[in-house]
Image 1 (cartoon, rainbow, N blue to C red):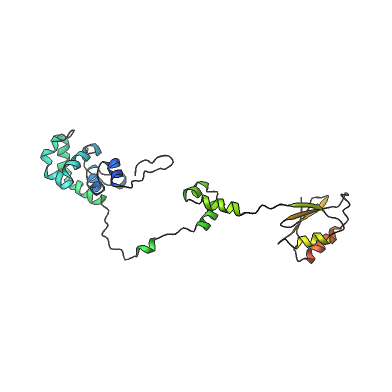
Image 2 (cartoon, rainbow, N blue to C red):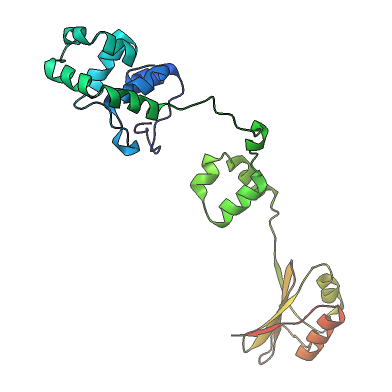
Amino acid sequence: MGKGEGKNRFKVLESDEDVVEQLGVKPDVIPDLFGLIGDKSDGIPGVRKVGEKKAVPMLAKYKNLEGIYENIDKLTELPGIGKGLIKNIEEDRELAFLSRDLATIHTDVHVDVSTEKFTFEMNSEKTLDLFSKLEFKSLIKKFGLEQEEEERTEEKEEIKREFAVLSDETDDIFEELKAGSRAAVFYNGVGFAISNDKKSWYLPIFHKYLGAKISVHGLCSKCLGLGYRVYIFQV
């Protein structure tokens, strides 16, 4: 309620003292306050010409609407309250009590539902996955998921990729290919590259490079023999 501080749009009232500081009355008197001042945003009419500055002193002295109307002849003793305002209070008596009813939150309504069904436990892992995918960095911080995000980052192993040029000695190379879970072949017009999860090799076609002798056909045959699907991309 009210304007918050910093990036928070609304102010959170956590105690009776916070309510008094914000509204001037204790929580149990709030319905009586809105009975007098109304609330246009919620369709609560209130009493004409009565605002917080006039309503709060009346409630501080006479506790509630009943007390105010029982002592209506004494209201002029309060600063800023004249006969014209008292006339409005008298004429709008019915609206005042109606407004109080509209502003009252009824806590005695029977609801045949266990409060346990309203409990919510956040799945931190799935929430972090979604927020990371959508790049909701502020929500990651707001929901206290930074620690889990840092732990994930620390758990990620740094992949060190090695490069080599293919020669006629290919047995060791294809043994290394078996260590990966997948492989891909890339063609750029002058040579081929084959790569698994950890290492990449280069095969020149139209130029000599460090004595490379293995053929493209032999390269693809070896890959197929290892059970890989071979995809060739041309740019």
